[in-house]
Amino acid sequence: MKNKKKIYYVYFITNKKNSVISSYRKKNFIIEEDRSGAINGIRIIVNRHLISSLNEKKDKRFERITREYDISDAVIIADKYLADKLEIADILFMARKKEFINNCDFITATINKRSHRSDSAVIVIGSGRWNVKDIYSILTVVRNYYKTIDVVMEYQMSGITGLAELVYNEWGIVLNLYPIKSYPCIRKDYAVFLIKRWRDYLKKKVPFETAYVVTDDDSFVEDHDHFFERNGTMYMGLKYVSDGNVEDTLCTQMTWQKPLLCEKFHVSVIDICELK
Image 1 (cartoon, rainbow, N blue to C red):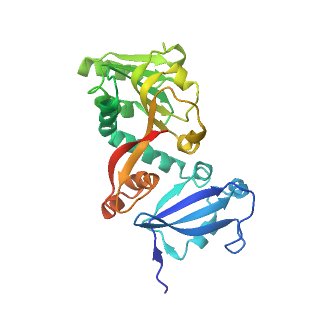
Image 2 (cartoon, rainbow, N blue to C red):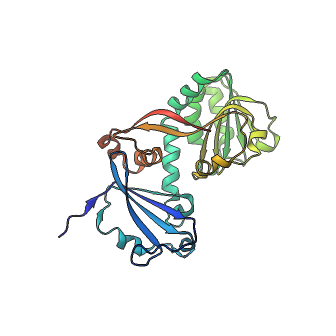
Image 3 (cartoon, rainbow, N blue to C red):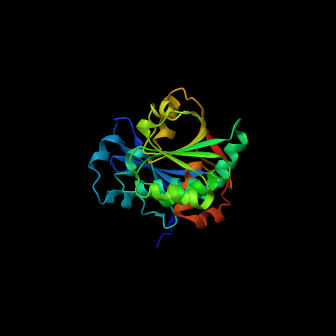
């Protein structure tokens, strides 16, 4: 039996052109061997017009074209167009969510150190993928760096009033709760945005000096080069160091999907990524 080539990531990417890729048995996708630092992987480029035809069980053809590779330890990544169709959007989001929660102290301390002021903070909840337990975990960190904390909600979160009472009883901190429509738009030193996607009006509703953003997908990263002139410094994601120059997105997913690979390739966090 032929030995399969060991790879450590599979990256699904949309071919945004309408031309048909025919390099692999005249199918509508192409496979390319790739390398990120010291890590071997493959990229599967899918024609845009094929995306709508992918069924809920994924496309069996992907299994056939990867059969010569050992993908048992591979991290699976996809752009926003393919993540839903391949049913991995939740996995990709959980990696970004846990990246923030697990590194919240490092992120907050780094931002606090770089800021001109560090008195007030606000947490904006605009995604249903976060719960009261998550917010409490974030507050245990933020309270160590900022005196006043607001929570702004785009919808009513179950248990948030009880959390405000708990925070006051445990720490003596008054947690100011606001629906986003009635928020007084007071500029804050630090803002945490936990949102579905970035929208331009947020910069007016919740003005800030510095912000950290976690979105349901990574569209902000893909689109930010063509985005608005921001009213403050914004960060999203972490910068990693590893064996070779490994892509940060791969490291983010590796820490959640295949944490043992982080030890194998000596992956560690060194900084936060600024959106420029």
